[in-house]
Length: 299
Image (cartoon, rainbow, N blue to C red):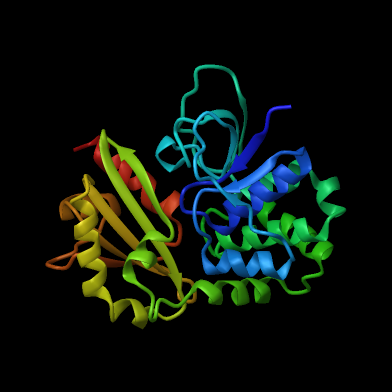
């Protein structure tokens, strides 16, 4: 039987990694990751005693099931053969032949995987722990506007299976592992969760980080903007970095690109700055990408 790999996007996060591990384990496939793991995901795997999947050095020609993404620009290797998709983002890809696709409007891919294979997950507390962690991570502990009732209900069920008595407290513990940028190289801070998009035929890059102390971000504004300018020179029309305050629920958007487009997309006035704080902005998928795409359509 030919190997099938289950893999998330090029900037692995807890949802993409956990969903790949559990889906592959249930189906008898091989889990893989498309890059180095962030500290939060490392913490989660260690907590539930799960080994890190192999890193795809070369996926060309291999059969893959994509989890937590379907944009070609976010794939480990666009020369691999996609045979399936399990995702909670809008469907953006096209394929030359029929494949299995499961896309649902929920807060995390883990919610979909858990719903598809609940009997198997209930029999494996480690899998339940991984999927719970992924839901808490992607919904920002249920604060993101992408959160659905299905995510909340699924989290309660999974917490019971894996023995987490207080999911919110665990979510905060998990988030704090990844929430400080003090002492970190600014390239790794911006690149850790960075995704490419095509908008109006233009290449747009959007990075994101979640923090509990926004003063850490303010202290490095110059470094952030300098790095975004460097990235823009690599063929991007626009580069954005969203620093999300998970305590006070808002984000500072830093950008290199057309300020007027940012103002139009988000209904803000920026002045002479290259950043703007937007209260209530918690989700790249739901609150950054759609208005930007709309703005690019109307240029």
